[in-house]
Amino acid sequence: MKHTILGSLAGLMLGLGTGAATAQDVTLRVADSLPVGHYIAESLLLPFIDEIEKTTDGKVGFDYFPAQQLGKAKDMLSLTQTGVTDMGYIGASYVADKLPLSSVAQLPGSFSSSCEGTMAYWSLAKPGGILDQEEYAPEGVRALMVLALAPYQLFSAKELSDLESFQGQKMRTSGGAQALAMTKLGGVPVQMSAPETREALSRGTLDAIVFPHSSVPPYDLTPHLKSATEDLNLGSFVLAYMISQEKYDSLPADVQQSLTEAGEEATRRACELVDAQDRTDKQAIADEGVNFVKLPESDVAKVQKILAGVGDEWAAELDARGKPGSTVLSAFQDALN
Image (cartoon, rainbow, N blue to C red; front, side, top):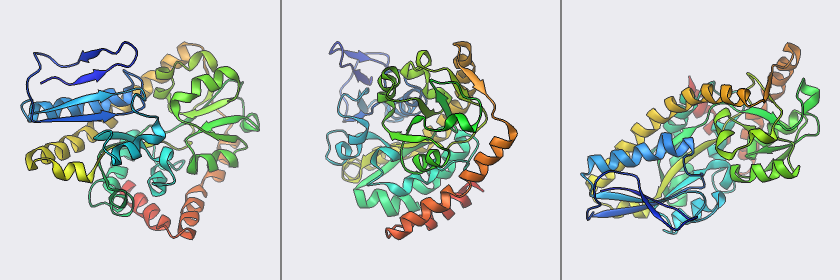
């Protein structure tokens, strides 16, 4: 068995495995909004696919549709629910109206590495966890694997020097708590998906982006950036590859077991790769001319003080809407500890 990437530009089917394709019992469609070669897919999805094909002796195969071929990032949840794709890449911020509680792992200052955030998030998101019970099961989906990205920095097309230089900059955020955080720091948050950022920077409709280091190279953003913060913690982004519960229930028990086991293993391994790549990509961005700036210590203290209450505000707003925001926040903090 070999899995395939279905390329939209040339309409070609590119085999990624080795050997000749053989008949399989199950072929699963998986879709995301990531460009081919993106580090999230390389670290999380493709190792998962390889492991499934290995453990099932090629009886389970995958057709992979990257780069928004089946729909935009905001559509992935509905595409998974309706069976257009069997597995979909679902970022919590892109569907905040449906999965608001999942943004708990995006709060600023929560964790200092991808693995720290990922494993805490996984304890809430995996089947039986509070996010599974409160959000995913009611939406008819289940998380197979998750990833929390390394802590975010501010990258700007302008020169950054201190907190005052944040003021009035139009900043791409992934929405939710991140937008609240950047508003408190004087920015003007603009919610958009990662694939839209390059054009927005090139046109000047964005001044800055709130991103982790490793998300800058895949979208070729360095030509549009001048400076970036160093050693701040402006939140993160959490994602899951999900499958509809109906589709999962239709699969043979041994395939279900393979998906579950491979998903947990992929989650653990991916965060280690992401943490290592974060350091490498920071240096590469600097080598391309982006100036990393350490804010004055007094400004760093101000940022930390300003952002310290974002989590409680986030939880209180959800509580007021009848969602268990405070309960989820407490569960996430316990998982981190």
